[in-house]
Image (cartoon, rainbow, N blue to C red; front, side, top):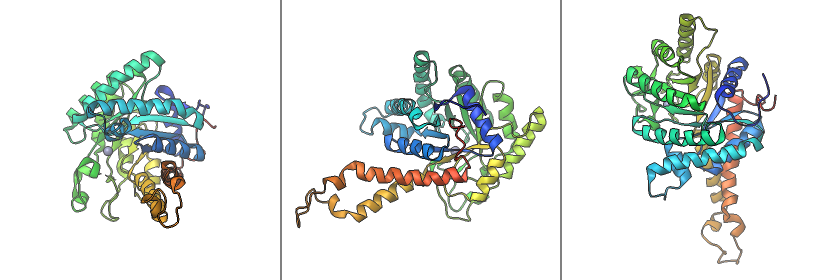
Length: 356
Ligand SMILES: [Zn+2]
């Protein structure tokens, strides 16, 4: 595989990167970020592991990036995503790895957010000759399949001239973020398993338009659930790949599949899913927890620095302890550590195309 320049990848290079994942039996961690701390931690982890990586923002993450105090929240979702992308475009190459820039779940209510980003993307493309984001994601999986796919086709047409890809979702992934499924009902919800003929229908409609990837549900849920409540069935991915390959006479694993709700999943099932063409696994809940536990531990270890600037008993100044760089750095380091594990699970470590 040809060496790629470090920095943000998109278009044909992005597709080459995904092909390298499938050929090499690995997947890229796709990590949700909310600001420069988490963005930098993700790139630090990628550099440390010599792994290419996906930085992604939800609409909430983008809004937080712009600042929750910004009066127009809808504008903040767009501007924050633009700010985050610019931050990554500027810094990524210095980390020496390939970085994919992606926006996470947008349902129909959030289409105005995507419209704003496409408009910003057109402007960015005209100025820089490259897209602002490598890909956007539409999650219309709660709707009828035809509505889901026709809207995805419409958006794919809009972003193909920007050398962008689209991620779509088929079947309902359970869990907190989507507001579907609960500890009690997820196991018998048939919708948690995407049907291969739906995947074929998506391929038939979208592949003539441009590049897309599919988040298919195989029992995965967003967030972390008590073990035993969810039955992961990666073989559903295999059946989908086989159906498309058979129908269209393609080589094995023609689809680029995405694993949503990767947090807390069994390692063996992750490995199996990668074998069936999963090229991206979303990680959010576990990295949030990693950040939080490290900050929590720091506060617990130095509680007086979080109550007093100068200790009333011994006049000890605490400035060097409560300096936000000290505790935010603990969060970053812990996030890096969790991503070391992700790179190992997904076998992306040492495989950066910027290093080969
Ligand atoms: Zn999803």
